[in-house]
Amino acid sequence: MLPTPDYRLTERQALTVYDPAEDSFLLMDAIEKDLEVLKALRPQIALEIGVGSGVISTFLAKSLSSLSLFSLGTDVNADACEAAMNTAKLNGVRVEIVRCDLVSAFLPRLLNSIDVLLFNPPYVPTDENEVDASDLSRCWAGGSRGVSTLNRLLPLIPDLLSIGGLFYVVALKENGVEQLLKHSERLRGSIVMERRAGIEYLYILKFERIL
Amino acid sequence: MKLLTHNFLSSRFLKDVSTGYPLKLSIEEKRILDSALDVNFLKNVMVKIDYEVLYNVAESIGESELLPPPDAPVTVDTLNDEQLNKLHRVLVCLDVIVGTLECPESGRVFPIRDGIPNLLVNEDEIA
Image (cartoon, rainbow over all chains, first blue to last red; front, top):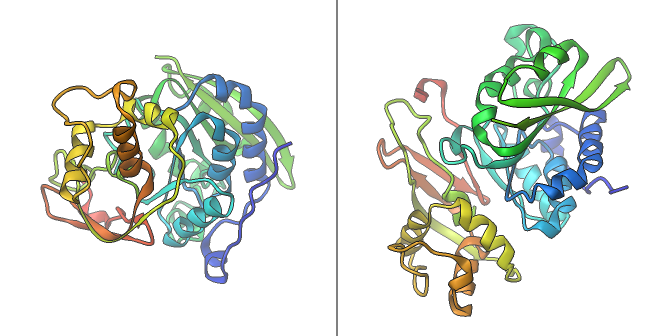
């Protein structure tokens, strides 16, 4: 089993940066489970949206370090950007961090170019006005059904991925997993892992660009 | 921020901006990272970068010497050791710590601090 990357949040970062929890660990477990698939893809560019503490991107970069992967990460929260960069450094990998909304700063240049895309979105069903209310609520508040932020990204996914490229996303049962899996005919959706964690039933969904 | 990252960034998300690419880079503080040459990495990224943009931004900061000119397609396999090392330097080792990126159309300036470019804007600036 691959170890969880070391990370240290400063007192200030800990106020608004998501501390890795069951959902983060499940996403890392899914990456580990799919490691041979990921290696066979020979990815050139990986991007994580909403890097937070940076453990996921760092984990991927470490897992695929033999492949000369270029790793990118974004976050809207300045403290998360800083934390993610430090986490990568702490573990001896490089992840380039850009502060922006979702993938906005990489359009159109990264269209058809992302080989591995990762997102642990704010998936908890909440009132719509809690979405984007603060850096802290952005870590979890997902609006009605918990998919408000994810729904802004989904239409872009088929065009962002390279052909054969993979998108891994954390989802909650309440997000409507069956509907998410079928959201685009240009993507083949599947469940990589699922696990109950306290009151949450979590999934890692994978989408492969086929068209 | 590496020049490699600069190669993929644009400010097209701004209102009334149609391409927003490439962003103009100004450097106040940079660092040259000590990193072993990885030819596979160069091969990987050269497939995805806009080489002319890389060359031009390298030239604008006085780093284009020895880089193959952008008038013909560049393949890593045909480069000599000097050129490979130079490409490695501008793509991988050169790290912009403090500086700015500027939208070529609107003039909107995005700060780079602690090596992180900030392209987050207010809602009223977005198309």
